[in-house]
Amino acid sequence: MSRLARAVLRRLLVLLPTLLGITLLTFALLHLLPGDGAALRFGGEGADPGAVDAAAFERFRAEHLLDAPLWRQYLDYLGPFDLSPRGHAWFGGSGEQPWGGLLAGDLGRELLRPSVGIAGELAQRLAITVPMSLAAAALIFGIGWPLGVLLAVRRGTAIARTLEVLLFALYALPTFWLGMALQSLLGGGGLGWLPVVGLHGRDADSAAPLHYALDTLAHAVLPLVALVAPSLAYVARQARSSVLEVLDADFVLCARARGSSERQVLWRHVVPNALTPLVTLVGQTLPWLVGGWVVIETVFELPGMGKYAYDGLMRREYGVVAACVLLSALLTALGHLASDLAQAWIDPRVRLD
Amino acid sequence: MSSAAALLSVRSLSVRYSRRRGPPLDALREVSFDLGRGEFLALVGASGSGKSSLARAVAGLTPCSGTVRLSEASGARAIQLVFQDAGASLNPRRRIGAVLEEVLALGPQPRSSALELLERVGLGREQLLAAPHELSGGQRQRAAIARALAAQPRVLVCDEILSALDTSVQAQILELLGELRRARGLGVLFVTHDLAVARRCADRVGVLHAGALVELGPPAQVFGAPASEHTRELWGARLRWPAPHTRP
Image (cartoon, rainbow over all chains, first blue to last red; front, side, top):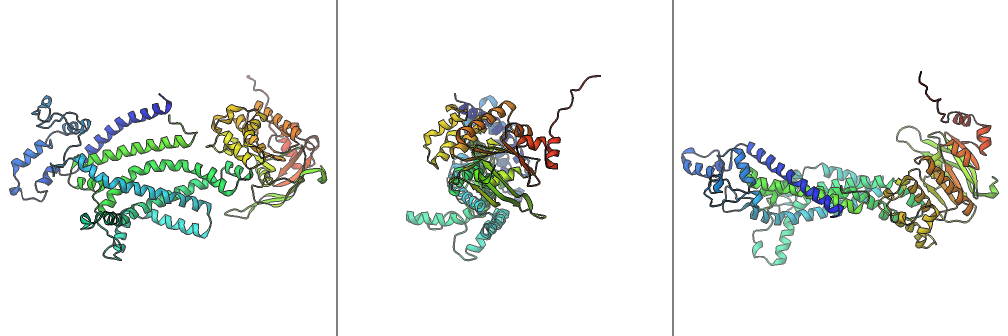
């Protein structure tokens, strides 16, 4: 096995206890919140106690182990044994459904909508969030990085200074505020140029494919702008700093002394070396984008993973929130591993030990 | 060195750095000297005396006033600078062979002469494919000299190139520079704080103080009968080992 394969394997093995710790922490934190899914299903905290079927309420809690000790609930969530009344006979269940939990590849079902499997719903939501995230990442790095290079090369000029101030202002804007400001300015209440809610118009399902695609694109513009703008500003500022640092390096002076043109100096020596630290940013952006979508999808009411996590939290859907957190944690770890691998590939000094 | 026989003629060279606060700093003030073909001119001085500014100004890497003129018609690459930190002066992402080929591609020499250049500085095929971080300090300095030679310079400006190397490697590098001077008539402007090296190896020694060239002459004269107070101070302050400690 090559050194690289061994290093990757080692990192993946370390990932397992890390993820286990994250599930434990998430589970504990979620159960510190007041109320549970059963209370919400049976009318919420403000429900008339006389109207609630107490027997059904208790039965629901027992079926979903909400009345069991926390350690038992956690082990049930972790799997591979189903510890509910219908679970494995070894643990006092009926044996009807012996296996379940994360280790059995089962993310469970929603409490309020028992017919909805969390894994299937999450996959549907990801089909919206992932393309949006990829588009956001492409915009953030496709614009932010060259912009940073330009700002470094043209440092001190009036246009560079103006752009730097603008980028700083963009970076300082909270995402939710920017989203709401864009909605007010460009939505129905303002200029009315773009739709501000949802991913499709009311009659999109009956539209021709081209119109459907254009409708989706129009709905995606504002959420993307709100998510991309602050991150783009951050990446551009980082790229600028990185390029400025390399511009002063001795090997760049050497390249100039040897007679290389400024274009050659920039593209052969400065940019490839300034790129290396930015590769780390790409890896770190993946999970960060998911976090950003929680806010953006909530503001723009997009049915993606971020909105699913937010709604899950509001409805005390432990399984939903835990699945979203676990996925984010997995993305974080894989993002870091991917950026380390990419760094080792582009920079011969970096070793993945 | 008469001006007529000079390979490199430096006249009234001044370097001024602007500062965010306070008046600008005159790092170099009206420095003039000549460098002959195959000559080894050592420039010594205390820290902050302007040695590195002079090296960079002569190599055309720092804005300056005054003139730096070569006697023979040569390209812009005729003066090459070798840096103190050879590791930092080599692109960390490029292999030594690629570094040399890039310089060769800008001149008349074929790219295939990269190995020849490395062999001339005592390196070989193994180093051709190595990245800078895979070489020792001495090998990196040799590779940096090879890269400078790839530009076919007439003058080599060496800025404290021995300071990070151990004594045996210092001797090898000095021997290499000697060979290059003899074989190619390369003029060497050798910036150093090591007075012993300057005294032993240089044809002439220049002493810089506060950006001005306060003394210039053969080592025996400069160190034996210094005309400048600053030279006397510099020579008097050189490192002297104390007597071995004896236990009572």
